[in-house]
Structures are given as structure tokens and as C-alpha cells.
Length: 130
Image 1 (cartoon, one colour):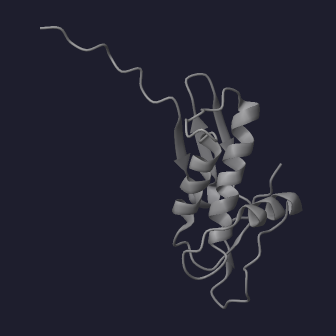
Image 2 (cartoon, helix red, strand yellow):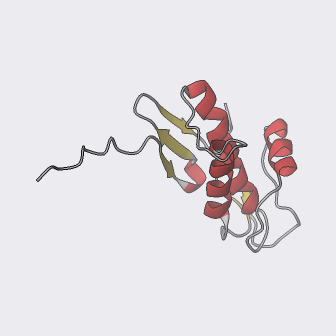
Image 3 (cartoon, one colour):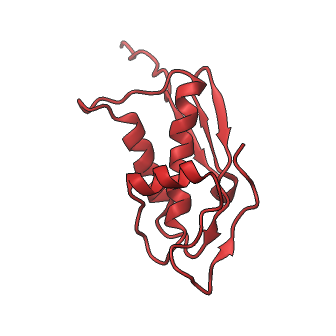
């Protein structure tokens, strides 16, 4: 009986840590990105927004998956993912952000405010992006 060759393992592992951000690991690199300061109304859908942003970052126009090869390529993708999750937390219900909302939040490099004044909004983290 011949055994199949061993699987080389995952090429990318991403760990989400809520208000603490996220970590990505490849065979050669390890990068952690802090979450932006966010006023949280509801966390429903934050993980979905994070994961859909990650898929968007990894899929090429022809539908193949491209894993970022360097920390310089991986860091902006991971930062976009944590921003997408944070924006989703700024209102009640699971409505993921648009590309424009993500770009705008990243350009502002400031606290992500609740989309509308909400009595349940509270700051989830006091980290600033560096």
C-alpha cells in the first residue's frame, strides 16, 4: 500500500482577536495588526465582514487565490480586514461596509464612529494605529 504524500499544511492562517486586531501567519512571516479605535454598537457580522474582506484581498480577477508573499503585501490586506470588521460594529445589525467606507476609514486614521448616534455605543479599544 502506497500512502499519499504528506500535505504541506495551510499557506495562510489568520487569527481574529476582536478589539485587539488580528494576526496572520505564513510559512515565513508573522504579522499582527491592531484594531482601529471603534465605538461599538453591535458586533454581529464583524467576523463575516473581516472574512469577506480577506477573501476579496486574496482572490485575483481570474478567480485564483494569491497569498501575499511578504509582510509588506500582507499588512495592508490584514489592516483592511480589521477595518471592515470594526466598521460593521458601528451600527445595529449585520451590514458589511462598502469598499469606499473602508478606504475612507483607513484614510482618516482615527476613531471609527458609530454610523448613527446610538445609546449602546461604547469604545471597544483605545489602541491607535501606528
